[in-house]
Length: 299
Image 1: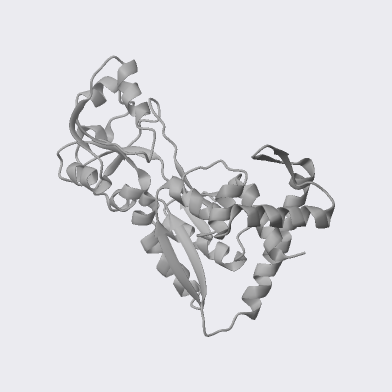
Image 2: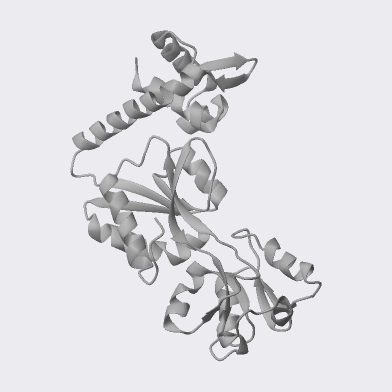
């Protein structure tokens, strides 16, 4: 029995495809298939049910997953223990675009100070790309939006809810129970991208049968924020990009929870076999606590 056989099994489980597993392992499909068949022969069970070219994991295969994960994790931990000190251990972190811009510049130096023996490598990518990198073991942990995949564990890390923000002195600053009609009367900057469900904001005005004064339509957070800071409009923006301005009073968060709530969270995601750096995980949680010390931590 060979550790490569366990890895081939887990790659097919995570990626749900022999073809994708072969690409991730830089092997041919027949080689991956042969490794799985050898493992099945050694175990005396079928780990996958075969129907033509398609594979479906068997009940025995599902039951074997935690044991295969444990074997691979123990092997990896043993390799790390025996690794020579002249090559620092490298931790690969990925994050989606908004987390890369607003949290990572704080988190990476924090993690390095707490773990000077480690070297950190960082990727910024879309959520879809980050999921692929996780499944291909190209990143150890990724900060991203909510994801559903049987090969991934996730933990709530950061609050990134969408807020209505205005500049200081705006009439809405002290207004309670704003109506949709009042919102529609103000010049607005609309930030549009895949980061949150913008259709819900559009729907808010549609349901009230009013048209908002969209005077600026932009696809860049900093541009949208700058327009509001220059007192040329108001707008809905995700919390991470306005955190500092809210804390300093340069922008004001207006409560519109009675008419709209868009709750977003950033998750820390890793493979099901666990994040193999428990001390670093604690430091990640500490970095979040320091970053959002004005709020209650959400982990």
